[in-house]
Length: 164
Image (cartoon, rainbow, N blue to C red; front, side, top):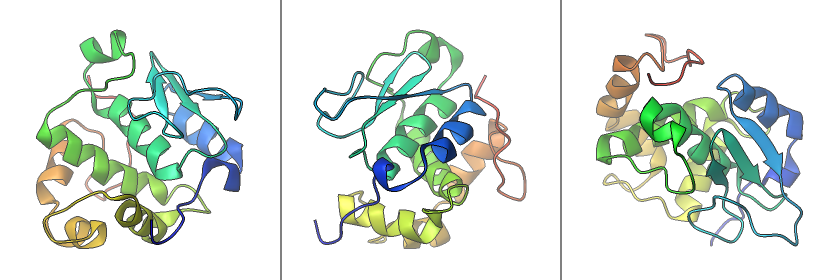
């Protein structure tokens, strides 16, 4: 990995807890010696079980926002049985990536630019070569998806609603 990514331990926990609580997500901090419940990718990656978002101090902020955005973007039937695998289709995955970039601006230590860098550093792949280029030049469909489900308003602000 070219650049280290921002981790949960480098930011104030209340910033994430406060943001996620607006979406009825409960942040759970796991001891460093324990595995993360509900982590699809394992190791330090965030996990989801029901409405609980599990992180450790070494969990990348992009990972916890990505998993949180999966919770926001999935429909109620998937949320009700959520355990580890968020599922979803291609369009939803793009919407999740778009929303995590939007929400990054609601975390002082993160912001969009750092999210772009961390996504690229971690290995997210976009056809235009970078998260920033995708977001700025090729993500209209993802934004429209979020608008269609009333997860963003017309000014690209989060509505703090869950997909119904």
